[in-house]
Image (tube, rainbow, N blue to C red; front, top):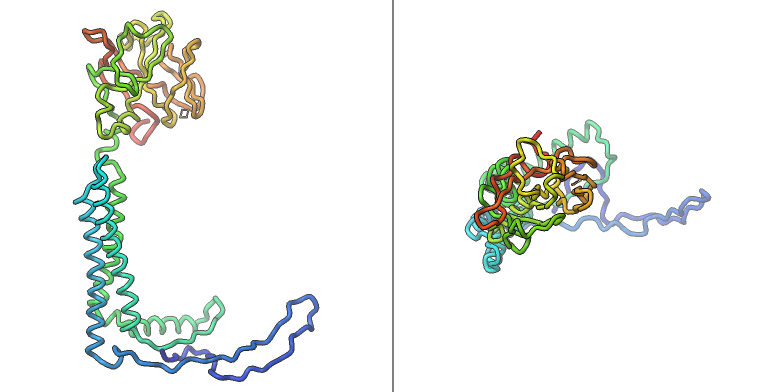
Length: 356
Ligand code: FES
């Protein structure tokens, strides 16, 4: 590389360095020592083959845009692989295939840009050495004008304005490279309407209440006074996404004396002989409300101590929760097993954007 005029005086090869004694004329300051090295200057500029041979120049240009094309293909391959090799639960081979092709695509996308840009700089951009002395951070008008000159020079030297195919393929590669990330992150979001997903649970008419986690159905006659059972809807354990469904459908079942329940008039038919079922998902920020005080009939959320009174339709009597736990209307089927009369009549869990 050759030296450019930067408007400053570069160091000169072989310049003599005046040797001086260490300065000790300022007591308490560090000793200043003169530079003991001779500035070697810049080596003579050696032109590259692409500087001398137009054929080699064209060949290098082809390689650069081919690398950018490879980058674009790699990014497209990553997106296609993500769709073509979906992750299947319990199938390690699907995980391997997905990772292998996704990784290959992203690697090609990034390598194509990286190698192409380096090769472009090494073979086609001007190869002159440049000496640029340090300046104060704040630029003067002259410096700013010089910056414009440098940009113009950079444009000329890199050929980005002239070599349109390289420029366009580089732009294409830069646009295509983030696409796999966008596709991957989009897949983390909900696949269905999020409001509908939050409003509905697996509970519906005639679904049996079964024990969590065994899935055993529950006879009303088996529940003793004061007992509490953790409950899920029948069939939940067979679902592929059972944890997502369980996070909404988990229920606590308690048996009280019927006369202890102060039921709202419209809910008098929602319990069965003192057995009541309430959502286990705290209406504050969604922790499982799992502590039942048998004597007081209070349900306590361990996260921030919200306390719900089971005898009074689970209204909040303490803590940051703002609304009672939703009640699941229950009854029994012909065999005496507890079943739901319907789903919840309101969304379970904490507030969200569609719920005031
Ligand atoms: S999540 Fe239950 S009190 Fe905060």
